[in-house]
Image (cartoon, rainbow, N blue to C red; front, side):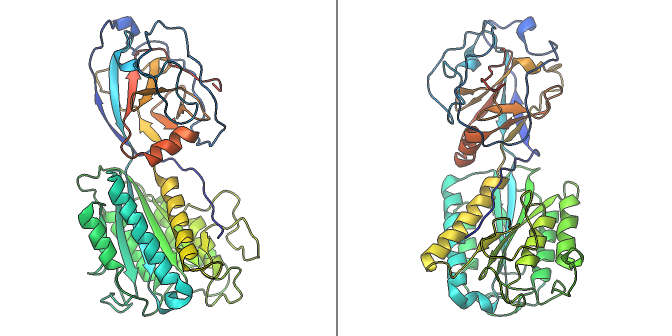
Length: 421
């Protein structure tokens, strides 16, 4: 299987900020109204190398506290305890940006070949079960399946139909609905355009329901093995004029709250394809690129053996047995989950708090202080006028794996920086 993965961190977050005076605090150490200079860093995501953090700058902050670690080399010497430091004046408890995922699964007759249906549905069930176990209120999931035996429209649409599952937090009830929707089998044609249009409309109109917070990133994931048989069918010439490709590009540019909507594609078919009327990597690659998810430098028209520059996630069902194909689907879906989950937290401060001093901001995860470091710590989105804190490398990866981690932004103490600042 060939997959592309890149770290995407989205910035549409919400934070609940509570201020309270810490022991020994003073106005001059408040972190507001002080120097406007800061040591920042790039806002881009970086895998980076693992590094050890130094003790930071020379403020008498009384850091110390409990020992421990978060990530790999991203924790300042001395552990946590910032919230009780004499210099600390306020604590902002931050919340990750939510993500609203809508899966669109191809249930056309050809999905019965080479264990594609069994593998894809098995992978989705495993992913949904994992989401339920993690109980992450920062991610909602919905599901549209077209042309399977449970499709009441017989592949005619419109979608979502009465059997499909609306986006919601994945608790036990949602997990049951999602699994039940996958209980059918491959049946009819491939109305990809009709299904995509219905999916985009659902995402555009989606309003988050408790416990999902509002303002999240909207993501559509198409899983398909075939060439569209409706208005998105290839008509020759450039794919940039294909109806589905153009629609994906349009959805990417829509403003909140309707958009923007990212479009990911998982294609399953023999690669490279010798029959573009049966499995067309060029359609899938152009769709993903237009939808904003093709990695930098990918070739949307790639169809050569051994290629490593595909714009979509490819699962070749003939490359292994059924279990291996299912694992390949899981790997692709988890890669998408990793890309869309947020590593960005806002500095949404109380309007009466005054001017933020970016040189007196620190970050803790589950009580452990994380250094300002572009490799495995955190940086500002804009060092001179910061509005967000962005985690990188191992710190970002660990946040994605731990849905229950508590992130606090501590104001008032001189920022602890790592060796890469």
